[in-house]
Length: 90
Image (tube, rainbow, N blue to C red; front, side, top):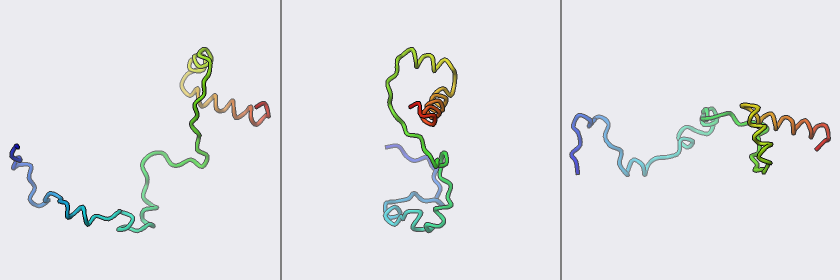
């Protein structure tokens, strides 16, 4: 076992032990639900109409052609499918 580096020991900030963690409570219990609702969650905001991930098998030449159209090809495919649904073609 190696000795701790005395330069890295901070006596004003002792190591947290099991007793500290045994007394720990969730932030919502300490801060209250109203505060927690205002806390910004990391990541993108939740969409009102979230997309659904699906797996679909397509011909290789179709996928190759779509990918060659550049970045955003999946979004464009979605838009075309949505248009076909609105027009009653699907």
